Length: 331
Ligand code: ATP
Ligand code: MG
Image 1 (cartoon, rainbow, N blue to C red):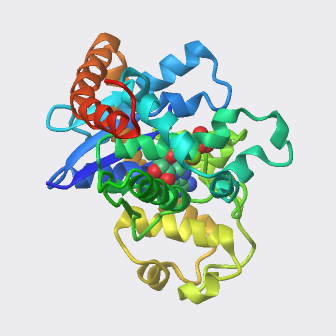
Image 2: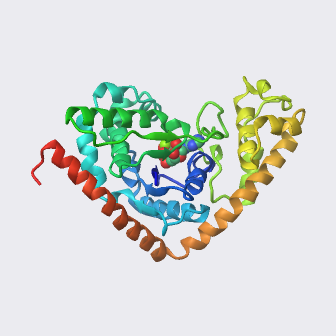
Image 3: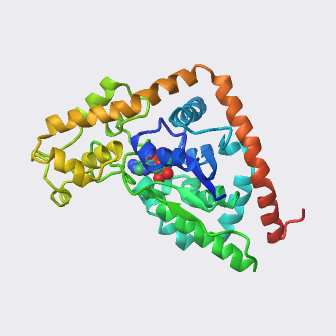
């Protein structure tokens, strides 16, 4: 059975972009794949995290995933720092990846901005650790949003160079599994920026724990333009905010943008935003309620993650031990 690995950072509450770009597809893959889902706390601290909040966010993240339909018994759900294989292989990959490769990573440029010198070294080598996360399990399919495509390509370059340098066929090729719809959900405040947990404005995203009133308010305030909706997707080309809202509606209603515009073309944003709010609330409210219920039993969440970590280590430890032997470490 194909092995799937995917991760999410406990840097805040999962938002609609995480759900449509990643979590929803994780749930679907569980039927016919062996899945390993990871709360990547090592990645989270590449940007400063308050320790108490990091712990809380890790549990909250776990609760949202469970509420969305992740099965921690048939599959594995754990937090990254619990399995040392990630950092062991991550260090080897720091020594395999070239600086020139990392210099091309657009996410580092986006996150560091102009103030490059003041960011952590961890933020810079983050993609090497991400390659280790996946390859420590020899996972071959990685469901991600569009923003992670470049990191998966880098992971493949690292795997190839490792195999070449040590004259082995050890690490497999990885396939990014990017959803056909809503692979890049944009900020509600700026159609040129992706929706992110780390965006300073809470109004820029819909959290998977938002209640109906909060969702309605955020959608009412979402940036749009004064024109009514066009009757076909071509009319959205120069209208990023409108395109984003139509894309969200389509992904949630299981329609194509063409179908959405056949129905809503010519409408102003007032009625369309109401219709969008309805489909959002219908999807998010049950997840938010179940998340709150699960968070009432923290020891249960911790037990799930502990069990997941032990099972993850059983898979990763022998693979990473073999990689260390190939490198020449005394074992
Ligand atoms: P941060 O701002 O801390 O980086 P994030 O919102 O980018 O947080 P991640 O934890 O980095 O979220 O990513 C988790 C998963 O969600 C990844 O598979 C990523 O590709 C996907 N994802 C993140 N943002 C979006 C988005 N706006 N649209 C679609 N998928 C997304
Ligand atoms: Mg991110």
